[in-house]
Length: 465
Image: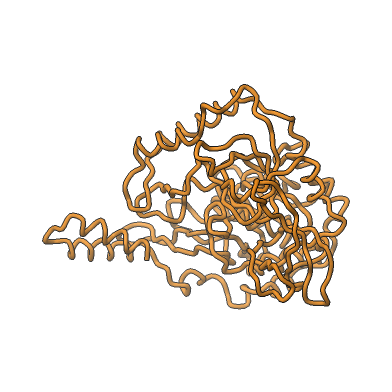
């Protein structure tokens, strides 16, 4: 509907006598270029392949323990300390260099200024917009040394590249990819606060994966000891469903927010077999942290982490099948790397947020230089890859390998679209915009090439084999 609305606005703004004809032509061209029918999108995927049971059924050892809890702790430490792909914000120094902070903020702003980006109404982002952003970034208040404060998010919030919720896109009609969206945080995400916007509405924060701007009213400030206590509860609950609602009463009628798969909250106790009490952060009037009690349905969480088996990962992945794709986790959803991150978080694995960084974790099983024949890649996957614990990386995208059927490899992943076949107008774009099971041969006979043609690396998420 947003796309249709934008076309109408653009066409009728000119009020020419051929406006209706132009609208018909634009719409017809778009329909020829883009096909959204599910039957065509899932043509290579049989009905049974859209269930976890099918892939578990053909798996050679779905219940084998891939890594113990201690081994997972070691792998997380390796990712953080050796690979430097994540970080422990509680180990930050008391202050950071204001000169370096200002330089990085200015470089980011300049990078966006140089790009040709558009607002949702189709108009380009102009100098006046970027000047407003520059003023709000509050460079004048950056000191030589900026003190590090800590905080916990009290509800779901977006992490933005610039302090604004204005959406910017690469093309006037492309609403799927908001170039200012970097990440999204569930309730209970720890952050380090190092700067604030001029209007006081935004904090610039450091989290486990990135730096960015978040709404200040969604962060409760605390000291480092309070944060450590929140992160190290005696008991904790891990969300194992796509989304689990958090309530403020035991009857589960006073809604607070929802949390996504992999989120971990302190577990205070059980109210019978169906309701759990969990610790949730609140923001007091002075902006400081106050821990309170929330209530969640027991069916959506697990006390402690799940066992790391192929069955566990495949089942968690299929809990998310058909959930929407959103770049950077916008609107409380997830993109390709967040999908991977969430399902592995249920077993305690703290994977990086970025797909390229995820491809550097675990054990590299194979990598393919340019022009590697598809046959070689298919044979490699059949011999080396294991469903449920193997990631497949191609530039800008990551997938979970499921298995091979009739010499055709399959994966489950969160994706917005892919290219398919050829028409008189060029490549046809198939819109998916959700988590789906797909063949790696999708996209063949296109300029980009199929998934299998673009596959670069295959890695197993485990410790040394």
